Length: 387
Image 1 (tube, rainbow, N blue to C red):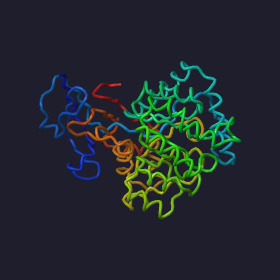
Image 2: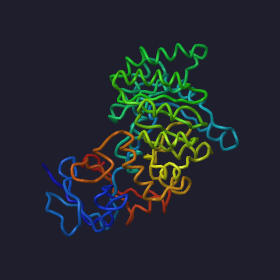
Image 3: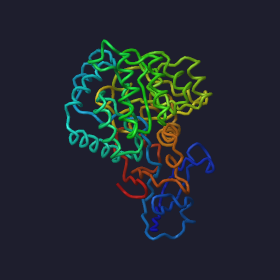
Image 4: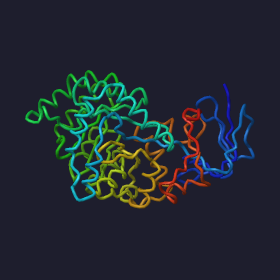
């Protein structure tokens, strides 16, 4: 098995509590990759020999970003909708149907090419693991093909047939829930790891959401929930009651919601690029962290409410607008994302972990929030291989 030594690391973020502090930061560090995993981490002066070596010249090395919430299988463009929001039109979930129409008309080749383009963008910005949802087809065939396409790029695929009720079921939402929990789930489940539902006004209520999640759980899928984005509602409590891995958005929370997240262990996924794009209030990350809730940061990259593929941008927003420290934001974008996906092999750089890492063209991780919008990613490794 070929080994590779990365040396000359000015600051190495391991996310290993044994190294001290939240980030387990090691200065003047080195690490050894064997095959696709981390074999050794420590001081540069104590580094063992390896088959090959790369001196990163004092740059920082961090775990690869884990983007635990993204909608990449789509067609069309909603730039005009964004422009309208910037002149005062409030965001609502209704624009999703515009993307549904375009996605249904697109060929498999067009959809696959668009996902490939966005994944390439993400890799260039340090993302090594990403989740991809369906949800812009909303027919049995279109949801199945969206997940099959997503599976070409990630193992973290999410069935989101319950994104909104499509136009053809506007007068029969119960019939659509039956479709989502029946034939659509049957077609989608073989391509999906997770089931998700948008519990929100204009989408699905608590009873509908519970039926959809329980149907997915019965098929062996893990649960995720779009929760409390547009206002206070039942989404977070529903996620906690069914044992979901994550409740994402969490923009409007009651004290009871925060307590439920803390006691249940459900990860709160915060998506600050959405608030940036919709001019909505940012979630209060400080409130969640101080209550003991595990927080993940993700892009929610999608063509409507937030068309950003950049985890560094989300880190900068979280520090500036959500009252997170730079250390908390980076941890949430790596180890927090891994927790959201219930993964223990990623999000940290310790022996035995997958060798997913990002080299920054900066001396420390602080530059991610100190120098927002600057392309700081020098090199990205996925499974020990540069991409």
